[in-house]
Length: 249
Image (tube, rainbow, N blue to C red; front, side, top):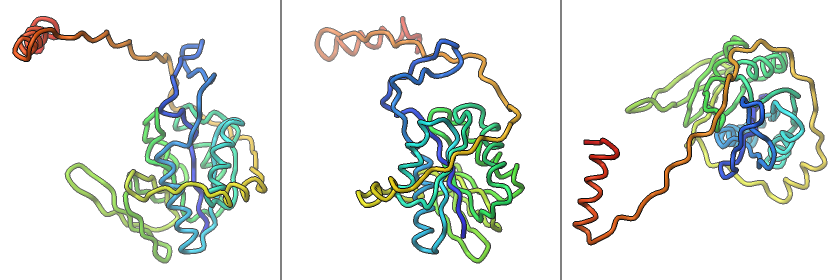
């Protein structure tokens, strides 16, 4: 079995985000980059399949040189090889799906795993688009996966319950929190990853599906204020503020 895991590099949730001078993108200065947490579940599932079924795991990311850190971490965790598609991995989900589809086509992957969405953009679109471009089955937002002889059975969360999706491989599966518990890289894995090389390829030309016209940070929240007096006075002041200022009532 051959598995491709698509990993997206995203800003750390604790990083202070700034808008770049063009007003359409993030300023990369001083940004700490990490693997999108949802993609971590996808990678963990691939490694477990490698350990249980002897699968070959190929980690892939679209981006620039900084995306190599994501791939090095994947190698340290247990991926067999890594590929960097040199292109804009932060932009349009359709363009990214086209890049990955162009690479994956005719390479014999039985399973393609990725997070159900990239943290920050939250488009939740790349995985389904990739499956459509490749013309293969898909199951999205899954919390349990079972593989048979050329088949898959996936459990996915839906409003008020769960749903079982079954299909034939090859397939694209997008992972949700709860699928597994991602591991940490061991010292042995980190040292072994240093001996492995990352294959670098130019990403295929794409057709944009959407373009960012403007990007802006939310307005700063107004400073809070401390209500004076005893509990009854504070309650009365809060009620008055909700009525007169917030217009809740």
